[in-house]
Length: 277
Image (cartoon, rainbow, N blue to C red; front, side, top):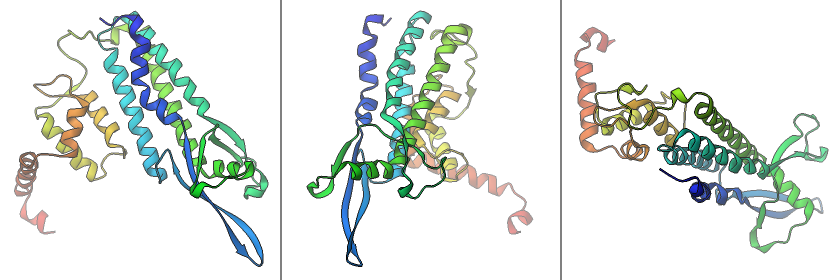
């Protein structure tokens, strides 16, 4: 049983990656372009927290969130109801400070947005700026660079709000619906869907569906976490997310061959006239 005195240390370790990510670093290139005898400034966003593309940055945040939730759930698994509630409430307090990483920005009209709604954006609050080639930008330049990183700031705010909502739901489940908190030594129906295949086959099958775009979800870590929560195998009532993702990322040749054999059997069972159409 974990003592409540150990909660701050545990949360420091669990939130370490998020704390590091919240120290936003924006790199950019600021140059001038000469046109008709005049100098025009050019701004180019080259990276946020070291990620050169928005898609990579967003995927990194989703991975951080998935790992954070997994660690929080694992940490409070063997606590009593009072300990779980206090632990998760302290986690909520930790998460709230990440909202302040972004603030609203009213974009000036010269930025090209005359619509009042479109001119309301979220931007990072007091990030570190890393100009290329050792430039020394002015305040006006930094404001424009903040505007260039508005999509990254919006993604951060949305993800933190989702994380807070999920943590609040966990707190409510523990505090007001204790009957749903199944003890770790409980037996019988766990509410998970039983499957007869191994974790190896489950991971490979999920990968096949993922590659086929069958899931309305493009984050592999989040998908593996959801599958581990919803399924149980004959030998593993609690599937390890890490183990499942390993088999998802790198299925063994034997598992892939078994999948191919099953698909081949399915094809052989079809009437020949259907296959020829």
